[in-house]
Length: 173
Image (cartoon, rainbow, N blue to C red; front, top):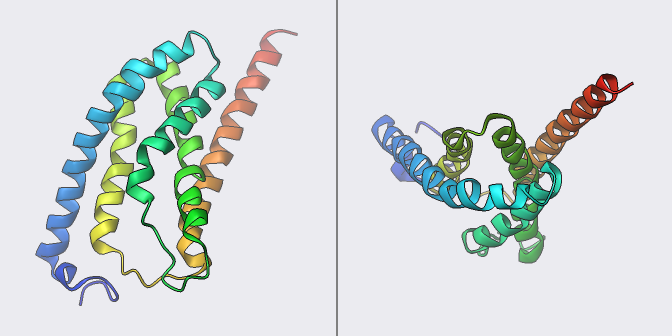
């Protein structure tokens, strides 16, 4: 078995390669299609009224709501953590800071294709994980990946905005 604990369909190199290739294609397609609306349409309209952080947070709330059906059935097999907590963590621990970063990158580059490429790994990862995850994690182990990604993304957001604030302060003595 190539990956212990993973579904039987992914125990061969060919099966794993097919899932990964499928994930990459799905990720690219979803990234392109979703970002046409999120970044191509909604973001410029929100940026006319709000700053990067508030635009990112508004879009993150909408983005989380949009993705709710994808996470609505997420559960802890042991039952130790309520479904509502799992769904809230999956939707709001890492989606908001990632969207803020996407808004910042778009604001700096004006590149819709770059936003599409930023989105693609999230969709690819979700697709691949849905086939390859063992489903054996219980309790806090269910939440830890989302919480760790959230902590990492919020740290990046904080660093970006601290550096930006410092540059503004240094430019205007």
